[in-house]
Each structure stands twice: as structure tokens, then as C-alpha cells.
Image (cartoon, rainbow, N blue to C red):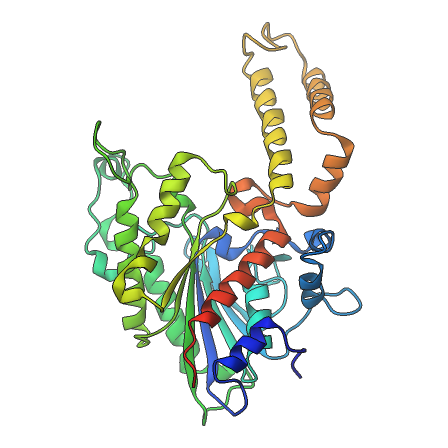
Length: 397
């Protein structure tokens, strides 16, 4: 039984509506650690503190406060550490964020949860989310698409004996192979699959970027005096990626959503802004008009939690100064004992971070800044935005 009509379900009706039996709707989600998702379920209450997002929290929970289990959406999730990959699958609910054991509930969410909830509301036919995500992966090497060509090892690669040519694109291939594996027998994951109706890959969401942003091996600085964006190659490889997944999945018109990296919020530094521009650029190409959308995620960054995170960074920095006997700080002569350093840091933190801020942090954050502070409100809004973008590109039937 589906939940009540929402904006998304009304949009689906306007697009041709879920009035008749139709193929299983399949959506592929791929990326790195923020597609994995590091928002602990314990931060859900923070969503309800904001009147604007309180209704969204109700969609994420049952009446008794337990996490919702979708009745019309299922998920297959391939993830792992190193070469130890595994699959978790079942009805879509919480726990399909980052996992230490790929087969077990990790107590976290990524964008998949509200994405799937939105699609569950939008379609009468069943929905299948196929998610493949691994932390710390780049587009230029790990997810390198076939059309990008052979990876050109740099001097640093050779010197440090890393990034062999043969391994380039390894996670791209794992992704494609897993999607094909699931679609060879959809009923294994989605019991509501009707072979007579078949299935349709209705969209692809890409959410990645941090490793490319901070990597000067793959994106060296421009020569002195040269103008341009040092991340320009990302745009080309992203366009190759879109073309290649459509070809490899035999879905030439598949709607494609680029989740534009938003860590740090709207007031990011110049390098981050340049990277966001490069990420979004393929959506402006003539061939991708109407079927590729770039969705900014910076607006969903929690500014109030981010301000507290900056203060926490100052505390960590002070700890470094004490341990390194920095000449401008309290332990310059190196005489402080470990208990004395801990006491000093505690006093420093209490002066810097108010009790109300500490309580707010405990309520809303559960990870580092590069993981959107592990804030469920942020990931919930991002997943919803991805769903709206994907639905906006669906063709009427």
C-alpha cells in the first residue's frame, strides 16, 4: 500500500501517471563516501526541529518513531573496503548508508533513503534502487570511464608505485557488472517484480567528487599566468562517464543526475567553487539538454553545525600546538603533563563552544565536514532533491 500523494507523486501523474501496470522502475546510484552516506540515524530528530523539514521527517518514520520500511521500493547495495565487496539488499529502509559489513545494517543513511521514499510515493509500480559506492574514490582513476582512454601515470605515480594502468576504471567496471547482475534476476531483490512487465532503467545519480577536489596529482595547478579551471578535465571525463554508462547499460536516453559537491556550504573557497563549476558543466552540453541535470548540494549544508565544526577544528588545532610544543602556545617549554594538556584543552573548548552548541552538535552531527557533518537532515534533503531532478526528466508515457 502506497502512502498519500506528495508533490512527487502528483508530478508523476502529470507525466503520464501510474494508472496502469508498468515496468519495474530501476534507479542506479553511484559514487564515493557521500553516496555511501555517513549520517547516523540518531541525528533524525534534528530534522524535526525545523518546521520546513519536519514534514519530511514524518515521511522517514512510522507513527511510533521507528524508521520507515518502504512498501514499494527495494535496494541492492554493493560496497566494501578494498577488494572485500559484498551486497546488502531488501526493502528500502535506514541502514543502507556506509557499512563496515556490506551485508549488515550500518546505522546510517545516504541519499538513497529519501530518494527511494520519494520514488515510492511517485510510482504505483515497484521501484528498485541499485546503489554502488565506495569511500575515497576518484573519477579520474577509480571510476575512470572507458572513453577516457588509458590512464596516463604521472611521475608521482611511478615514484610511489601506485595507480597502475590496468587498475584504472576498476570501480566503474564493478558498478556496471553489479547493475547487470541485479537486472539479470530482479525478483531476487524485488519480490514484486513482474517478468511480464519487465524493467526500465529510469535514472542514474552520480554523487562524488571530494577525492578529485583535493588531488593535485590528477589535477595539477595551471602554469603561471595561464587562465582557466584546473579541474576542466573532470568535465570531459564526466561527459565520457555519462555516455559510457548509457551505452553499457543499454539505456541511451536514461536521465542522469550529477550531484554537485557541496561540502562547506555556499561560501566555499575558490578552489571548491571551481570544482563545482567543472562538475556541473556537462549538464550544459547540447547533447545532454533535457536528460542531464546538475543538482547543487551546497544549499543543504547545515550552516549552524558548520560553524560549530569550525570551533571544534580550533580545539583540535590547539591540541596539536600543545603536543608539538609550539612556541606561541601554552606548552612551549614542553613541561605540561598529559593530564594537564587534557585539562587545558577542556577549558579551551568550554570557553569556545557554548553548552547549547554542544547539545546542538550531538543532536544533528555525526561525522566530519567532508561527509556533510554526518547530518541526516542534509542527506535527506539531498536525496529528495536528486529524486525531484530525476522525476523532472521522465518522459510521459
